[in-house]
Picture 1: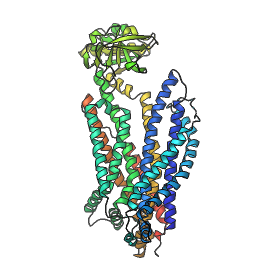
Picture 2: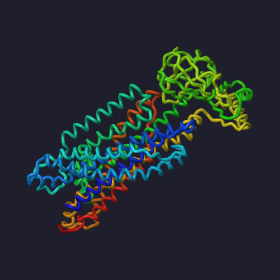
Picture 3: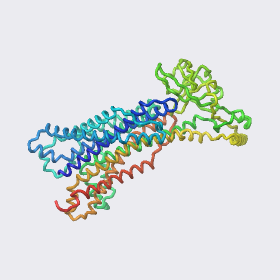
Picture 4: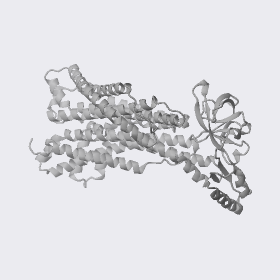
Length: 619
């Protein structure tokens, strides 16, 4: 008992320490970027860094809360027999509850302090890494502020106490007669309260995601919403896990009936006998798989939708980028429609608030409809004049005829009238201005519509020849759409997703090793019984490894369920915006995550068996 107690304390201490360290480092990075001064490109880079670190902070806090709470609850549940003994010698439910909470408090204080120290040491390297990968300004350094330490420390203590409080409530209801049990964890089922709360949380999350996808699909595909979605679903699935782990295992038993190896049968029976232990063990795997598939799948799905959206928006057959004029292209390809919109920016301010910069195109209002398919939801493009603007429908002010303050790319401020509103769809639709507002010296992206038949083929060849002579690049509309979505900025966005995800996955890896080791150690009486029945050390180890693998498999199934609950509403939103298309599942990344979970869990189980008394035959 004492050795197992020390192992539980060490596991809980390690999990909490690393959780506080992660939160501290993320908060220090956020504070450093938020208080730094920058102008121009540096200011834009700081805004990007603030958004990235803010998202990472939210993900890190969620992972910490989820993992620490489940770890502390499982550690207390493993002491069920010990708590029953205390009840047997006269301890009241209140005394048991108070003891559990005091232990959690005493453990969380040094863990929080050590976590703050580790987070402080890791932050400079984290900021340097962000700078090297263009996710933060290269000159950014750690600022010496104190509030991140207080916040991270308080988060760790509160989360530990919250996790222990839930377990303490269960511990206070332990009956003295349960001291006669040989199992450390009651495997008779899951409390009705847990099932009800889990069902309510999951139903509410799915209903909210579905409602958002149908009512405001443009919000449903936004990065912040996509990041939040799995965090809403995962807790509900985790609470329902004790009720969900049984059906797959029983189905596995039916499929392998009569052919099931004894080690697999023992492992499966062990998991079935203790669904609460299984739920606690699969929790970090569930979180890891759900976050990975949801975030990466959502990113890939939205990127694919943006490519299709751009292809639908550009009706021109060729896009020429580089130092070649529209007049040269018209002369080289007679019969073609050539339009040269110029990319620029315009800053608008809703209701005298702060300036918000939008991407814009300076265009010829009469010609733009010949090369772009813009869905006008209000007003008319024909009303676009030098003192007017066309805004996407995602903008705060969309009343046709309204006059709004604007700051042009050259810094001048003026008032512009809203001439029309166009559908934003996946977010790639820019605002439209007249060519009078085109920045001086800006190179246009020239859109070319070719004539039909053989004349079109000849015109296309002529356009490519002129472009090659001028050093310009010619792409088809599909090639341009893919390049626009999957360019350098897209690579940085994807790297940002990997960064946010990596913070949670690395921390979850430690939690997987910790909970698997605790779960395997909890089966020590089973391993001893197997040895007394004649099983060899290798057979016991094989059974423990198979049980760990089953736990990982269950976590993958539950994680896939949680991911599906987030990706289906996202697919619905994309379908409503631009039409049906496939969900882009990250099979390669998901496979690596699953393999990593198994590579962590199985060795942890084997080490736990080898280090414990379970491999010895004597009792």
